Each structure stands twice: as structure tokens, then as C-alpha cells.
Image (cartoon, rainbow, N blue to C red; front, side):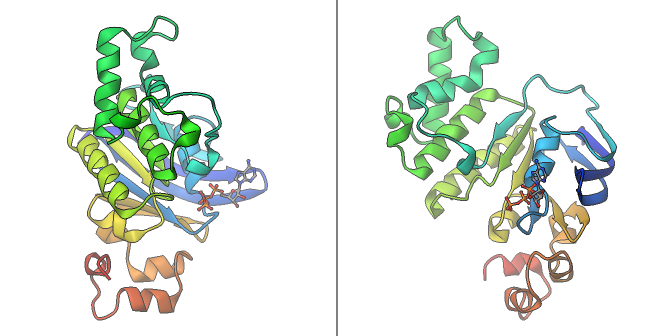
Length: 252
Ligand SMILES: Nc1ncnc2c1ncn2[C@@H]1O[C@H](COP(=O)(O)OP(=O)(O)OP(=O)(O)O)[C@@H](O)[C@H]1O
């Protein structure tokens, strides 16, 4: 497998606050990495570091094939100002500006690509609606269409399912599965374990000053989830009751 990003002995945090130390990890093409942890454990900070918006406190982050021109990024919905006066199709098209130029207009090919992305996201019928008229789930689909058009080798999604219902989540997960199948690396900040187990191959668990990483089965064990403050012992024993296989726990 090809590493898109190599992380070695990473420490991350702020001048007064070290969130975790000693994280070494390859983010591989064709994998989906779940980033989990309690509130405030550093998940968004980790994503911001990958976006190049902040430097590590220590350690090394390298891009073996060079830093891509475009990194796909979906911010937390709470960070998005939907009063921005723009239509759904224009928001999506912003994902493709590198391919078409900022001021040159999309042309027929570009318009077709935008329509295809909106269709894949299930909101082609909303293309001419203003953002402020959308529901939370519809807005998230529009933001996914923008990421589809970014066509990037690395896609970072910060809590994409926070405000969406089950059927929208399933739809968005099918897009994530396609990205992985196409050989992109997907980093997915999530809170809900059940969305992780069937769709992510690897995980990073942040919390307690630590960052555990490995395959989903290696990382998401009851012992680790409790030790790193993700859940209490009673929650873990309820969730993992009757077996030690976290895969079964996903369906509890
Ligand atoms: N610019 C900043 N300066 C100082 N501390 C910060 C800054 N940004 C975030 N923090 C702190 O760093 C910690 C990690 O924040 P971060 O947003 O990465 O957590 P998170 O795991 O994404 O949390 P949540 O699940 O609540 O979204 C928090 O304690 C937060 O208050």
C-alpha cells in the first residue's frame, strides 16, 4: 500500500496544552481512517494539522508523493455559515475551481461535472436553491458534492454525520466507500462507533494524553476506550456485553 502521509513521533497541541505525543502512523491510499476520542481530545486539531493549518509540537509529517495540490475537506457543520448568499450548484462548483480557474466559468464539461456530483449526493433537484433554505442534511449533501468535485487523493471529513438522519448517513457512507475503492485516503472524525466498524479499516483513538493507532479491531477495544476516556466502564460493559468482539458491539 502507498502512504499518502507519513507521521512519525508526532506531538500535537497548543502552547499551554499538549494533547498527545508519540503518534506514528501511515495514512494509506485506499483506506479509511477513523479518528475517535472524547470531546476536546484533539480530533479537529489533528485534522487542522493535516490541512497544514498548524505545526506539530514535535515529530515529523511527510508526504511521500509530495503534498497534493488539493486536500478534500469537510469542516464541522457548526463552522459553516449558511447565510452565505449562494446557490447549491455554486457551492458545489467551488470544489472544482482548480480545474476550471476561478474566473473563467465552468463551461459545459464543468457544468456536467457539477450536475453529476449533485446527483451522486442526491440533491440535483435542489441545485438552484439558496443555502439558507436547506435542512442540515441537505446542506451536508451539498458540502459532500463540493468534496466530490475536489477530486483529491486525501479527503478529511470532520464529523460528517453530526446533523444527519440514518438514511442520509448511509448515503454519505456509500460515497466514502467509493472514495476508498478509488484508492483515495479518507480520514473520518466520528463519534458513533457503529458508523466506523463497517466502513473504516483503521482507527486513531485520542484521549488521556495518548494516541492509539492500528486497525479498527486492534484499537477499539473496551479496555482502550475506557482508559482513554471515550466511555465509562459501565458503558463499555453494556456495549461489549456477552462477548469480547467489538464488531458485534456495533450492532447493539
Ligand atoms: N486555538 C486554540 N488555542 C488553544 N487551545 C485550543 C485551540 N483550539 C482548540 N484548543 C483546545 O484543544 C483541545 C482539543 O480541541 P479539538 O477541537 O481538537 O478537540 P475535538 O476532539 O475535536 O473536540 P470535539 O469532539 O468537542 O469537537 C480542546 O481542549 C480545545 O479547547
